[in-house]
Length: 73
Image (tube, rainbow, N blue to C red; front, top):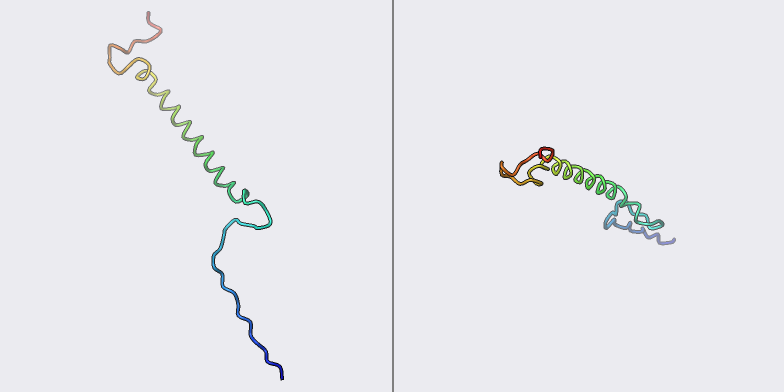
């Protein structure tokens, strides 16, 4: 009679999400890239909005006598 050995099952040591050894790993980083581009776009719009809002203070200073309308001469 033959001795039948039971094979031990392997353990899962860790799971890598978005990783396929047969393809490039760049594909797993594209959602993060899109999120980064969206975030920098929103930040740029907010910064330009703040510059536009405080244009008189930035251009002419904060003192009341310094604030002259450029159209008045």
